Amino acid sequence: MLAACAACAEPGPGPLVSAPSAPVAPVAAEPRPSAAPPGEGAPAACSQSWTLADMSGGPGRVVVVCGSDVRRASLDPALMARAIDPALGPARERVCACASRMPAPEYVDLVVTSTPDDGRASVEASEPDEELDPALAPAFVACVGKLATTFPRAHAQACDGADKATFVYPLHVELNR
Image (cartoon, rainbow, N blue to C red; front, side, top):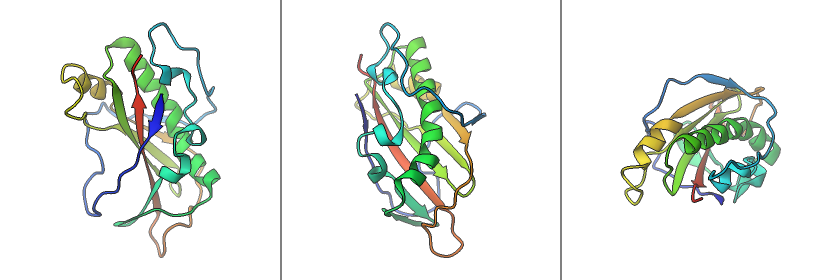
């Protein structure tokens, strides 16, 4: 099962997420199949489509950040998908590759951060919750790490003034087999 959730934090300096990460290598956005046949023992999430339209809550879960202002904004869902979807395919590949190589915790939380005006998005695994198995979760989060993608630039027109909009999309991925 694949579900998405969102949370707003106090605006201010600093990263939205911190997690161990491997060096970030840009991944060019390219069309990807929406679902692959699950391997034996693979989490069900690996056989599901990872696009914004297919996620629970979809575009309604995207948070728009303008400078230090965090808000929900009614934006074109197609623009949100163009800014978020290029990161979801590589994220799915990374999570599923890690799940095929090592024992996976019950779930992993990811944060997709996209700046449409720059044509860049990143995905980072969040620090594991205390409720997850401490023998599995930290290694899995480290395996997923952080990745970056690029896509054609698009002006979001979501922020007043000179601020560029940043879309933040928290994603909760169930890994129960």
